Length: 360
Image 1 (tube, rainbow, N blue to C red):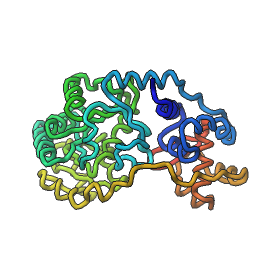
Image 2: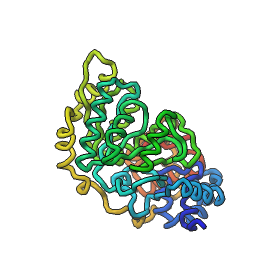
Image 3: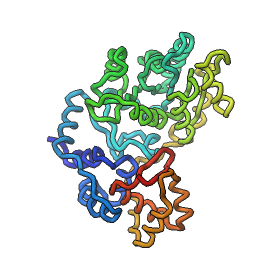
Image 4: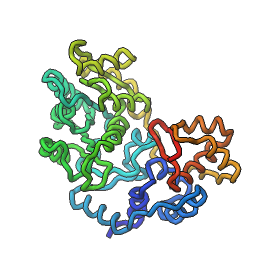
């Protein structure tokens, strides 16, 4: 029998229109998922719409049972053991599903990413670099994609590697990495944000990338073309205040343009494991990790009708930062967050990357 608190939390998380930011605000405001679920109709009504249909309890129970049958478990953001570096992100996943050695989450972690169509030299370098870092006690996290990701996992497998996938725990992607994914689940740690049975779609990969960057004190890009997913991960790492490192390459190889561009913009040039260790060791994960996450802050205040209309008037179809809304509205941040929460639950607001919002 599933634990009632877990069922309620999972119901809230799997409800349409409730993303990571909204989930955290609801728990902060109402104390637990059951109370938040009961409050949804009133919040959505104040936002001018109808509350989203909450995920059915039987669906949540089936998901919990299926993950357990796979040999995995759910790790909620307010559970002990949830990686504190990841919890620092505003859009940290409210729940992770995982299989394997969760103790790896307590190690200092470095992300390694790169091109799917990587050169043989880049794959060899990534494999050797990952092996040396893992041999030094560093957990190497990557995304189980072809090319550099695969090489990094293979190199770090014996020492400790974490694979973050875009689909469900029971879905292997790419198919040729099915055996490697199973080895990581058995000998390392496999993490997914999506529920079991979810086939990875294009929209899932940026969410996966934020987890890779969020788990690590720094991200190493081995080879990447301009506008690639690897550069998105590097950008997310930089926005989270983490170290960004890149391996230089030939200017004649388009696959090196992304890394060379990162170095030109200030990323640390990496040629060996010693360079990575020198970059991350002064930071030490213990110095940047927040205390265990708790939802014990002051709940947001309710907004008056006048404040609500003033704020809505500042919104439009073009995404704008929440901080900018706070400045222009002249309202307390808690009031602004309350109105945005009501609008989102009513289906009238969309959240965008970088803490920006727009009218739906």
